Length: 494
Image 1 (tube, helix red, strand yellow):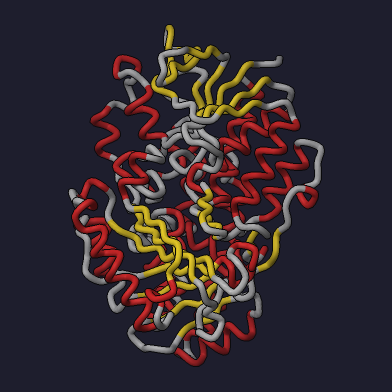
Image 2 (tube, one colour; image 1 turned 90 degrees about the vertical axis):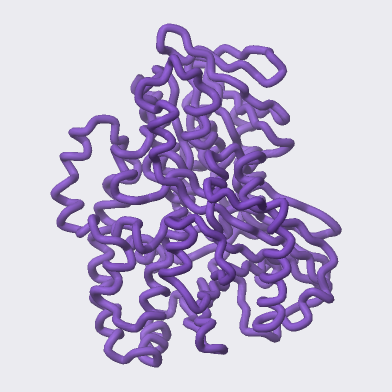
């Protein structure tokens, strides 16, 4: 049966579910608050520089292939993917000049591990052997399956216990690896999806296996090239996208979603609604309290939310190819557990930081004018629940980070900045409509995963579905794209 479907938001979750539903013959419209698509993957362009604001690595390229296959097309005809070489360089700032280069050459990786701690070579091999089983269960079997009933959780509980999912990612890695820096290198992955490695379930250790299995890729033309390709495909399938169209309320009649009211007061009717907006924001701001029995304001406030981010986008009028920095760089500060405790638990802005430095033009010169660099520097920070006044501290925080990078990694950086854009937690709260300005929605801890996470089909409102970081299975491209498969199947079987 052909249905009229409204998708709120055009992030990767919204675009992918819209394509899948349009390919099934449904009449699908996307309503996007901003002036172009992307959501967290919004693209900024200025003075010839292109800045991707969203995910910069693709770890499961076959998932994009599957979207195009569902539409009867070939992904390669719309955008290209290239392997990253190396995947990352991970710097130990406590020991200047030392880093772990992590790529697809396993033997080279083992030799590097040996240089840090010879005993950890065998430990790493054992660690990798266990992550395959976690991956097979956590990703292959469960990632695209809905958890709508508590019995769904009980069914997999023995497997989760066997995989020691009750342990944190860091604790799980520490069972096999003894060197503290190497423990950080193989446990940081939850940070990519908004989790604290000391709290996030050990099931996220499977991300390391996923990277080893399929590699780490980037899109030619940046992540924005993927968004543009998805927009094109959706329109070719007859889909309609409306920009500068902010939804103010989801209309509910007799417990059923029947449409939306826009910020300008106009109404759009539909047979069902799919929200790619942050799930907590959707419940808190788009659905009247009288329609919410499960996700009340009090219930939402009790959830634990991911950290937020400060991201500094820089256009540089020189190249830094003569430094140790590659395309993807992670810099661990002197503190690790203490810093993460400040960010996630104490909600305090620390004087120190760890950084992710993304040199997009390192592998894709088209991201910047000739002889120039396009890059961003990302620092995890507490979400808006911390009470930090970013209008007061933002500039000083930016200056401290720039000086740090300039002193240790990119000499004379400040003298070569010709374009700049910066975002902080206010951007995530106000532009992206995330609850408390979190960067990745609800934290990926065990008690907020699978059935315990906001469901892909609303418990409060019939014909309301969720895709994206705030629902099952969670943040990160593989999780977000999996949520679209779940909703496609739920609507198809409704």
